[in-house]
Length: 473
Image (cartoon, rainbow, N blue to C red; front, side, top):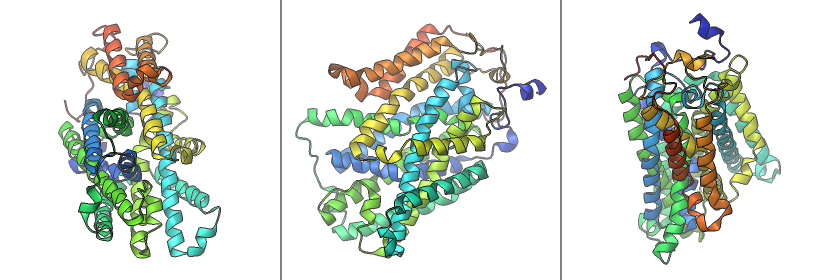
């Protein structure tokens, strides 16, 4: 143990979680996913599909299918976190090497920074509209949106500095309340629109099956891409699980149900906006600002702010904090990594990523899925096929051991990663193979995973010992 503590690749935040820290049960994981699903980007995902031409049921079916698909790599990657108590940046050292792991970790971290900025911008705008309802003069302030944006950013920083237990508390308490408020909002707009029937009867605007599938293909990739980030770093959460059963059941119950339920609210309310205002409004903040019942709008905006804070610190801070800590474990703690995440999130100008539904779904979500799908493919093939779920945990923290490869980098994994990303992005520059980009996550996952499986020799750097913790087999 003294050798581990002296290693430059080790700190307490990245260390395997022991029995005392394994306190998360089925409810905690179900609540985590409900809390992360009940957020404005989920709503905008659903409303963007409606704005793009899908019917209500086509949009909901696409979202449900995408979440069932991404649940598979989520559960596969979650296993190692529970079994060994290790976070994502340590887990990924097995296929990529103790130094090479920084490449996929940074890819994941930069995407999370973008999401952090998006969520912070949304939360700030909710506060700005809420203040305009309570204090109408506030609407005239040109700096109002930016002041609220920075205030909400500071609130996120406070939660980050208080640590993981605060995140766990927020998810357990906030998720049920926010979902209940969302349902109340749905009932309210249904009354304004004359019931659910008029809200959900609008037909698809696609005239042929070909038109529909041209929109459906990148949309499904966007749905998968929405959680492609957490599908990689899920060990950051499952390392605290009481058992494999607890994390698997909690995730299987929480993700598809929570995501699809709140997406239904987004679909229904967006459809209602057409009935009420004569246009489909995909931005719920702008929609709430036009409601003529200030009390109801204020309650909904409070719920939006709480939901955004919940998901931001859970989905967009835990992973990049660990990833940045992995770069320099001796100098960058979990909390310092969270501050770095917040600063980069500001610099990524999130207001540009949300300028319209097309930029959000087909630009942001599909684009970064081309980077993360290959990482997921390599992780799954390495853990299940190459190593048969056997990791030498101590070697993950030490130089010159099982995961040293060549200079700390597994160049086979790097080559597979580069090939997966390149093939997925090929569709952006060669129009006849646009389908490669439309299915970027799937293409990257299978190309990189398959190539890595061919190049990696079974048993290579497999390790000679299994240091399992009480999290499960």
